[in-house]
Image 1 (cartoon, one colour):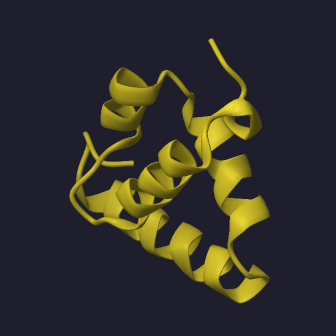
Image 2: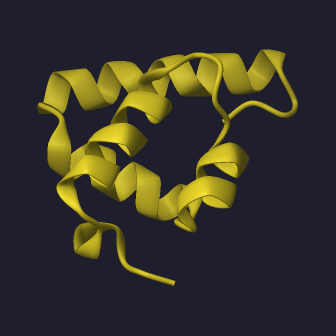
Length: 71
């Protein structure tokens, strides 16, 4: 398995887009790119501005409470 920072920039952009989507789970990202939930969170933290990352995590947590299979 590759580390998230070793992926091509195009894949990193696609992963960020998928993570920001309200319809893609961490499991789907893992199946397509082979990076774990923890690696996605680290990638998002490194790629987004602090406020954007915090807002994303808050949204992901709120969806997680409502959907068992969601992020």
